Amino acid sequence: MATKLSAAVLFSGILYLVLVAALPAFHPQPVSLKYPDSWPSPAYDFSKNRLTKEGIELGRQLFYDPVLSKDSTVSCSSCHLSYTAFTHVDHALSHGIADRIGTRNSPALTNLAWAGSFMWDGAVNHLDVQALAPISSPVEMDETIENVVKKLQRQPAYTTLFFDAFGDSTVTGEHLLKALSQFELTLISANAKYDRVMAGKDNFTEQEQRGYHLFQKNCARCHAEPFFTNYRFENNGLPLDTTLNDYGRGAVTKQPQDSLKFKVPTLRNIEFSYPYMHDGRFRNLQDVLNHYARADSLGIKLSSNEKVDLVAFLLTLTDRDFLFNPDFAFPRK
Amino acid sequence: MNGPAKVLRCLLVTCLLSMPLLLKAQSTAKTCVLQVNPLLHGKPAEHGLLIGKVNGDSIAIHTFQFYLGNFTLLKNGKTVWQAKNRYSLLDINDAGTCTITLKTGVAFDALAFDLGTDSLTNVSGAMGGDLDPTKGMYWAWNSGYVNFKLEGYAEKCPTRNHQFEFHIGGYMPPFQTVQPIEFSDLKTGNIQVDIELSGFFEHMDLAKTHTVMSPSETSAKLAQLLAKTFRVHGN
Image (cartoon, rainbow over the protein chains, first blue to last red):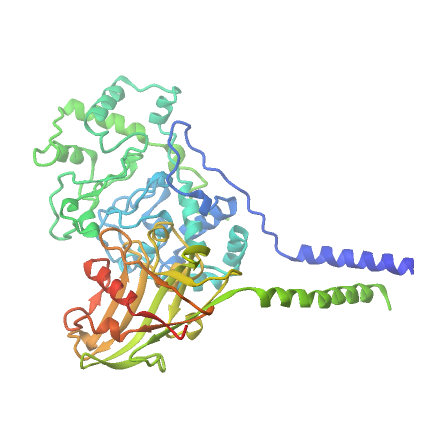
């Protein structure tokens, strides 16, 4: 009897172990965002979307996967390339599937955890829901979130990744969007020469130092440190392009005082994020400074030497660790 | 009898013995069952359509989807139970969605809820369940939930195929569209709520107002109109 009982216990034990081993394990590894101590706390509420290694990895796969677009030709990275500060270099107006041209220049994706609104007009109020806009835009991905979810559900590789990240192999819009956010939240640029100088680990050249003073005097009100944007909407004096008739923030709030206001873009990695402005109308920084010198824009008069100094400072915002970070690049297997 | 069979039998007996306990727990729970009935002149949808005449104009409604949420139960004017941030998406083309069961365990005499989503829900990023953006009730290009969709045909509409299309939402002042609704003096937990849509269409001119797809003064007014059509009956 005793032998039979112990055999039964042993059998049950083995059965239990086999069953437990057969069940997929859900043990996501928590990740905390790394940024300089001197920076403020992020605006993003991580309590609703905890960063994990698996969530970030899923987001990265999705970011680089053209499955998000209707004809599987365009991914997020088509307009937000890691090596060019996550923007669409060389295109004044970004293009989507079937060479359809949009109405705006794709913004650089940097330090998004501190941003309170998204898009040039701030029409998107949270990073999680930002991706819905390009996915559904007819001139970008021309797809629906419903259909993306269906396509992903058919791919076993993805259902595994969704399980690993969220403990559920059923793909949902919520998890898809939260995974994209997780990857995007890691895109932190905080190691440019500027940052090293601020941390006391490097020094500006005399020219860069002169440029920094000019910057603080003339530009920092909108392009506030350390993010080089105040995340607000401003009218910087650009005349309306009547081929686009883009009134920016005004079209969102329907308030006349917001007409022709656009989100102040970050200047981090500006060396790589050309062309400039919401419609990419300026091909280089000289054109930008010439625009700001005009009396009917901001009237910032600088001598040609001062312009060179200012550009020398702006180049210290280039962060090669960010631009060439292998964790941000196409996920090669 | 061998060992494993004995273990199984033990488990089975334990389960059977605990059954009455489980059943008892269920039968004593105080539950609120909300049955929502979208109607046009007292008639429910047939084959997915609400059909009737309003102000002499024939109308047919083929889409009516709306959010109800933030359910709160009250007793003598005091909140006794609340399901904060829980929302249900109701759809005339999916009858099952029109019955909402709240397992509350408390006695109550009033029910309050929101028609539409509150502002916090609109700024909290990606949500799941009935609030998942795959439900087609989220505006991609100007963040926020569509609190209700009401679409159909009316002779009067000067639009293509005489269609009217209302996608009503908006959480930012001055065009907030969420509407608080409260029913008091409830005698039972089985609550029948009628939404008599003739009351919505009687107060508007479909010849002029037929396409509202973004937050505006009109959308705020239409949200108020819809909220006024909610009535409890037989309670």
